[in-house]
Image (cartoon, rainbow, N blue to C red; front, top):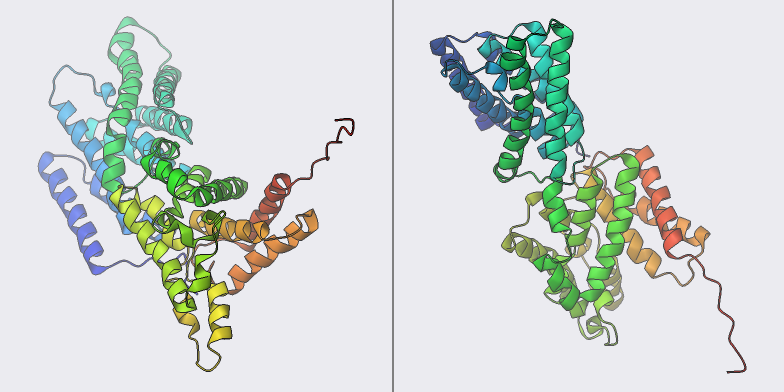
Length: 446
């Protein structure tokens, strides 16, 4: 079983991080900046790699944000007469929460950005704390932001917190303080909001991340892929909608990214558009095409929908975060129906089980694992003859238990408590979906 906390650091990544820190050390030495800056960055990297078990790639991405901030501070120093308080320090933690959706990471970036800017621009400790608290306010306001209007609100929050904190530190208000300190502090909060608004898409593409704004755009039914799916594979589209409702509720119940889970579920079966008639939900009034095929041929058709889905997603330039849902929602699971059919038809020959398994990989995140479970549970409950609460509950737990025993959840870091919570959420949502209705009485006179 793979340890989800293990960090594999390659030699190239070590060299890249070492070269980056050495370059920063040389830059600080010849620029006359404090040599505490590269030391602080070094311990920042140690914390990310060995305490939070983050990837070296994340360290390099966050370091780029901090280096750009330090460069901006260096440029601002060259303009005599311009207040250093105009520097939009809060933009860094705001970008961090928007791109990585991690509150602890945003707190760390607020601390790092305030400390590094303070070392370059010569802020004392109270002033550094002012920018730290301003960055925190902006990051907290940006958490789970789903409209771009929140960015402006976050900028106002930053401005208010920075001005308020400075007045708490220096309560003696005068005209010079208003013009040269309080006004720049307020303006810097608004500048931070505009910087985030202008650069978020750039960093999203550069870092390979996906923001809530992009996810909401992808969830729009007018998206080209979804419009195609409605026409070409309506049954698969309806199935994806149900899976998305199940998966979003389950993701929300255990505190992971519910929006990413929902959008990933929308696109998890787009590969079925290539040959929709070979999948039960799209056959409607026509017969089952697999009745005329050998199990080995049916296996190829089913396996290919994953490959074709990934190719289709890349053709439409979907984010890798969304593409991951396509292969991972099947993992290395067994195509059970055609495997059993092959065993029944080819009793004289040995049928290799591995040939009837999806290529994987297994789910690497909790979000893709939830979509896997929701996809399997939806198909199993739809095939039931009677949808009583007891039978729905038994079926849901049987499906999830089978996935667990088969090792499909080994690499996604789901705990047993979370799996139980997911199962209970599925039972609740499916119970509401298949609720009974009172039969309306007929008017016999008519």
